[in-house]
Image 1 (cartoon, rainbow, N blue to C red):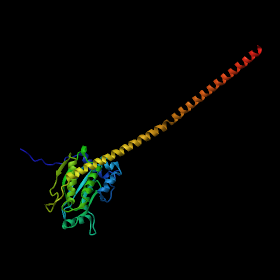
Image 2 (tube, helix red, strand yellow; image 1 turned 60 degrees about the horizontal axis):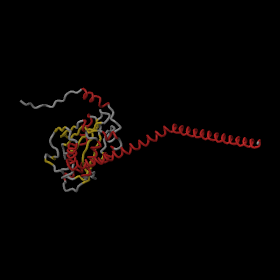
Image 3 (cartoon, rainbow, N blue to C red; image 1 turned 90 degrees about the vertical axis):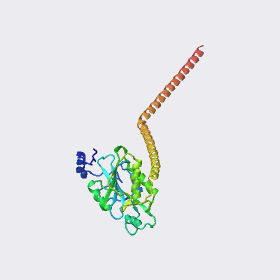
Image 4 (spheres, rainbow, N blue to C red; image 1 turned 180 degrees about the vertical axis):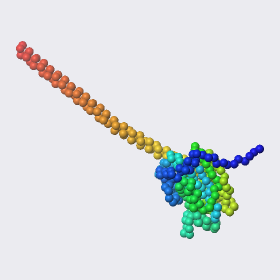
Length: 323
């Protein structure tokens, strides 16, 4: 007889202590763009976020351990993602970033209201898309309140966990997001809206990093008022473009690494020569002194030989006169 298993949250001393101590752990300050000081989070264009990761190796090395698929439950049912990044050295630290596609702000309201106008009036011309990522505080006590404040009433549709051995880095995620923005820079109702963006990011990361565990939580993805929303199918194309961009990125990194190693070798050689300089100078002085001694000995021999020759000449002269 088969029984339906129930999901039971097991007590963990480690998790219990982490929950108690978490508010007292300071957020890292050495990973800008991923971890942010306490305060109001700021929306960052994904292209700017990609550039920001270059300012710190630790930022680029933060690992994506979890994604959550979110959906607003009122009005236009906007869809967004939550990205959970773990710090590469301060392993207790986890940053949660929100990711979404909206429209460039217009004169009548916010970027989301512009997107809503597109949904209400499908004939509106395409608007420039605004793909943004927002670093938030990592506290589980504040993230839900932040999401509610930012997006309003919402629900979570899926969770996706990556094992420690196969987690995408922040740099890999940023390159994928840049590929998406380049692939579709315009917000279009029937193809490239928030539903397309959240869906494509989610499915592309699943395809590119297949070692993951996905858990469905609620229904409603890519739906508005229960009806499916048309969107472009871009996952395979985006993955191919990502692989090409990542290969170029790794090649550039390799060139920079080789140039750095060559510079370090030159410095080491220069330092080695500087360290050996006293020894080199001493050897040169010894050679010069040996050459001086040899010259002096040669001069003395020549003078002695000349004196001997003069003495012989006088003796010969005396013998001649005596005869």
